[in-house]
Length: 512
Figure (cartoon, rainbow, N blue to C red):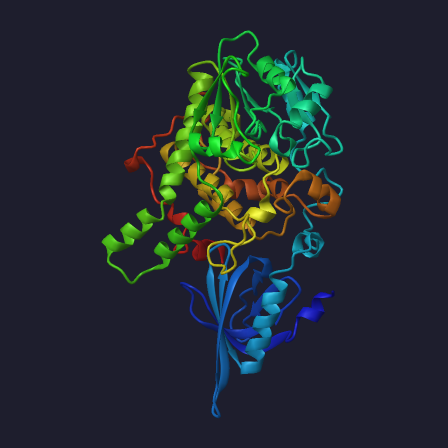
């Protein structure tokens, strides 16, 4: 279907735009296939206001049709938490504009989304898509070449549809063993390397849960793979991001956990991290509290606390700190997994690397970390970020896990203001881009889907754009001083703060 078929009214004159901390402005509103464009032709030479339709999370409309006046109001609540109001003369025009916005903002076909049409002059489709491949990342870590190798076992995505084509695995484990181990892990996500600690020689790995089931099935190849990771050492830790009860219950549906008798040398620890509906509702309550100005300060703070958002931040940082402590202070390798291995596992592994690795704390290093641990590793962005906090539609797969990561990174940067090579505006930019973007970086749910839909050939990469000279200057931390030491976050309540930058109080000022 052509975009024009969704547009019932293309433009309306004398529309009033209202947005926080700006004077109401009268001008012309135009609807295109991907944007709302508001231009103030009667005023000064201010540039037009553009809103990506994909950014709209909810639409509220009201109309008035009297003999003396016919008009309507559309309130747009955006995924980046910005709230706009359009006063439109004419009831019919208002309803047509609202209908057009509803249709165009909910298009599901990936190839119809704006990144496939965005062509900035400073980027070329001929450039390499992304910052680095698994092979390039491996080539930079020469110290692991004796014990680890790059496997192309998933080159056609047949072993794991959510993994990239190449992964790093122990040198002693051949591809046939990996295939059999993958059959024993949910979604085929067998344990792979994500971080190597140069001083201790230990590693952080991630995977999905084993499919031991109620009958306590075993997989010799999976056991052999994990044994190869701790070969020559006494102990390794498995950090399960589910509670012990959740792990036990998973057995009843075919999942499970690693038993002590089968995985000798590995000790399992449970640290429950919420995800899915619980996390989504927590964000909704947080946004409602931040936008509610009708209560006293005490009741307002109570609503913030009842959202439990800071509890999720605290748990994530605590678990990541535990992983980092096992690796650096105790000298033991760690495997992180929950159930699917595409959400909390990536959250914990990313934060642990930020704590330990000074390279990941640079601007380029942080973006490279997000590319490896989230984009390439198969976080289902399209499912998780289909809607934000305002939408009345509740999909089963929604969860602001990536937004939680950004909040945790903000807490780290606040506690260690000199250790991060990037600034808060970068986190705000990423929080906006993950929901609606000109770039293809956060499209689809896996590397395989991006290949099938042509994302890498027909869209541009956000991370490459952010590393251009003028962008780098804007997003760099001017106070940055590199330290080779680990940064150990405090998770005590007085040390964690409400991130006002991720509330609707702040976002409209910076992002609209």
